[in-house]
Image (cartoon, rainbow, N blue to C red):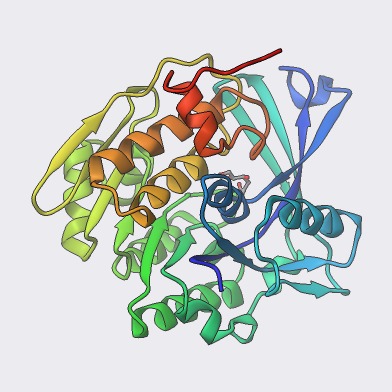
Length: 315
Ligand code: KDG
């Protein structure tokens, strides 16, 4: 059984080959996407086991996703194939490295029909950690119920719950989003918001106020992503900041999932919060320097090369 379990929708992403408005783009590169699937690939590349629960369509895109995840070593034994609904897809529009829009074609997708019956209690309860993002509850009422049931199983069996709000306002309305995500946060031991997400949920962009609010809701540790300024983490006893390594930004999508995978890997390794934050920041920075949602997720060896601790032999 995997150490880390997560649930959510994976999609095929069409990454434009040029930095242009989408109406002027002629060619795309197909890739894998979906926050929780990205996160599980990140966890596996960094040396731990991850299992991803979902539904995918019985179509070429679903098969591509399953093959990609299997090839990465993610456990997909709990994924259901749905012959009635399609796999979701999305198109990315990159006007510049930091100016990205997304166009989803995922309404009525197989994943949006996930339901609590898809969950195997033993699979979740034997994990060390359950990772939830704010995207899954936005997909449908049954997806939301599935998230709550997964959390309930984890809580009953003392499985750590981590939560990345991953706010996607193209998927639901503001009031429902705010209410649901603040409610889910109450059950999370580890919360990993971006500063803008904290701002949206809590009406402040001060990272320490954001972190304190999630600690007050019940979290043990909160790490707030600060974009180019790095990240900060807070527990009941400590507050710390870590600056972001200076890298050339190519594509910011997927960086948050890399950050979460880095932070959780540190937790699974039994590291102190400072080391978890450092790895999270390094992984996030490596991810933004390559195109695609998962392509840049590094192995531990690649992190050490990035840090200059290992010399890379190129030829
Ligand atoms: O965090 C990256 C994800 O946002 C991306 O891979 C696609 O899951 C996705 C979404 O819903 O936007």
